[in-house]
Image (cartoon, rainbow, N blue to C red):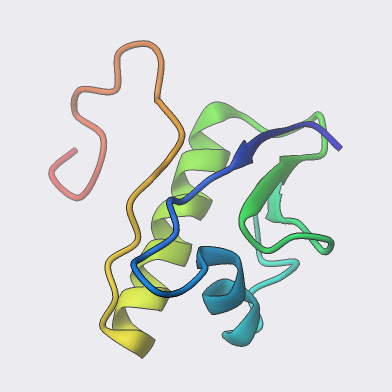
Length: 90
């Protein structure tokens, strides 16, 4: 399935994929985007997903990791295009 590779940078002393997997988020889905069943730090697109699906899922995963572990994941992907207005303030 198409992906952009590793979605989050690894936090110091740990692995983003391990954290996401430990929280049982593999398979979590928003629209046509889901957390890969093979590698938890990959967000895959079933070819019907949009860039917004991918980003929204990444935001949800990031929030769950923060809430459950206190760790702040940082995106490794670069968002191309105009994303002004994205987020809670939009």
